[in-house]
View 1: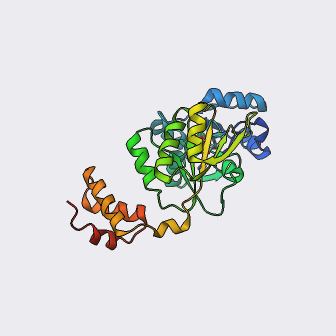
View 2: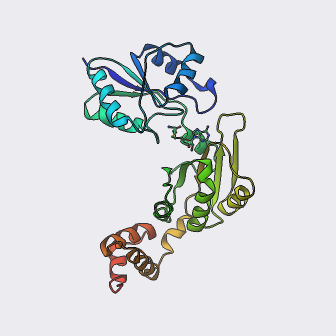
View 3: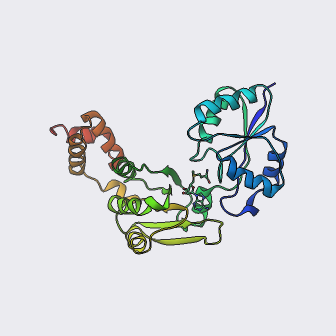
Length: 277
Ligand code: SAM
């Protein structure tokens, strides 16, 4: 009989956040798959657990995923941990869960620390409807495209970001969403220097230009005010389609993307942009 895959969340800063159930699962698993075995070894030492570890990370996941799958199919139970937080949320655990699901293996997720939910809950932004956008691309063009696709988004938006890319990202966000858009920058969550800066995109750019950011960040950005959704006109659609076509995007895709970004019906955009060359 096949074994199981357990997703075991680990602390995002405060070691006290490991739960009794997580500890028991790490103790009882046949082996642990870890993103960085050195990081996980420290945690296991803290918990007094000795267990066989295999590495499973971005650059070996294609090969190691199949090794782990074979062991589970042969009857072993695997506990998957990432460096911090909930496995499979913006880390390679995503692919292992897909692989196990495709092979009919039971996957059990233990609830626990997760940076996105911790940040959202203390952000002071609307939490009723939100979307998680993960990491933005490091390439300026695709980062801008990602942000532009969110122009009409009215839900609260959550992003992961590394400190060395934060300023560029904030500048792009301010130019796409407007300098007045509220943002909560949640830094070093659960750690000694935990901080939540509730401000606007424009002010955040000024703050981190003066004091370069340090530590880990989750950005919680307010969604567009609901009325902004209907504010775009056919004229706006024409200029956006022209801009996208000038960038080499086909008319069909430019119409599709513009309709999505400006929240306008596709036929309205299509008809308005008929004469765009
Ligand atoms: N799977 C993890 C989770 O959902 O908690 C996240 C893994 S992702 C590779 C790492 C990113 O999560 C960091 O770049 C940062 O944006 C965010 N993060 C993790 N720990 C954090 C913390 N203590 N404070 C703020 N952000 C954190």
